[in-house]
Image (cartoon, rainbow, N blue to C red; front, side, top):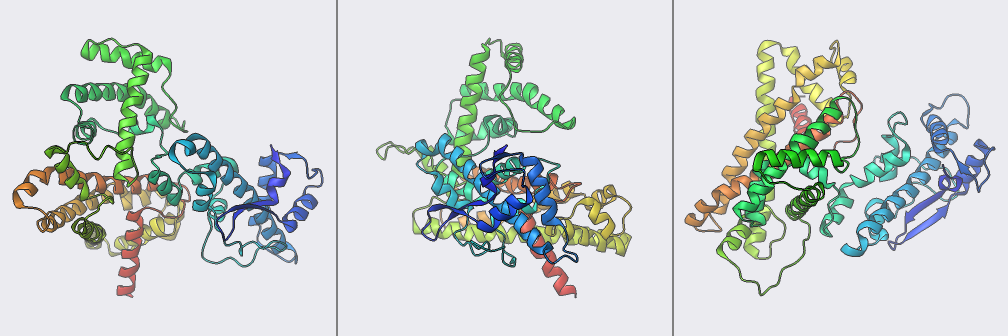
Length: 483
């Protein structure tokens, strides 16, 4: 249940960047006329109201002259509700992190709400839509009442908003739970991050690896089993029973006996270290150290290696190298996409020319137009969506691009780095550079895999990953050249 006024009051950011709430008379009049059983002060059943408004919004205008008006006013009411939910999410984030990390709800709202309110005028129905979409419009376009409530869907998309997450990272906040971080961290990553970034002792690293492996064997294994059964949702903290199972496994592996509370504390400490590392490599801020602290050769080498992939460079040479690296990153990704796509198309062409055309068209429909596998099957004349899955082989396709991408990028970065450091030091850092590049490439491909996984079998959201963006650019260019 929500206050009825949430459907005619719009939260906005004005031209000065301040948060305002505007009552929209046309939305209020329409809402109260459409739902006369409710008073302005009423609490209303959101699910029922939103389904009806969504039905009117998506209803195609027919003969009645007021259909378009009803469609637009329904959309306006829903956007008002979404804007208030966006503010609630930002208030929650301020409550959890704002005081410690130095930001307010208003700072967050400026990331997710536009100050240009011309799309929705104060006393009128919405104007004609342009190709640009604000976050509330994007949320509404992709909303399905069968999947979740509008409030839940809004919360999810706000917390995944790129500009908002960039702002939070700059203030040292990374919106992923400890348990999700531990789930997708490997023992090999623990070894590298804890030795190179946190500089822990070998004993501490071995303890952390053992704890992580036990956590994976218990918590992650059960989590994967739940997902296979169709049970989804956020990663919740381990139960007492799970903590006891982790402790028992640790005892059998190492002979060390820990209480459940100790296991929980150690897991949270490990996740905190991993969180700090992720914030750092994504360009976020961490607690600063004294400028008087001694700098060891290990620190200097680690710093130089980070400079190859990080934004926090201060010298002219480092800035120049970083700019070059960013250009090489995109250029190598483009080269890998082109080579692998052409090779796959050529193989299919040799077997069946029509199959090659279907492959390229299916790639474009999936990554660039957001079509589901079922829709693609109809578009390319295949019998079922699993035929599309078999044709695209997206996992193998991404793996081939990842391998080619890393080879190209490593060679170019090593060649470029010769200008900035002496050969002996570069040789000593080569392994660290390769690991850093491998992590960035793996992260890019993982983002693409996650994006594709949420789309399979259903209509997916607008493409956001760099991988999909560059693939679509290549496919568009290729099509133009062949027309």
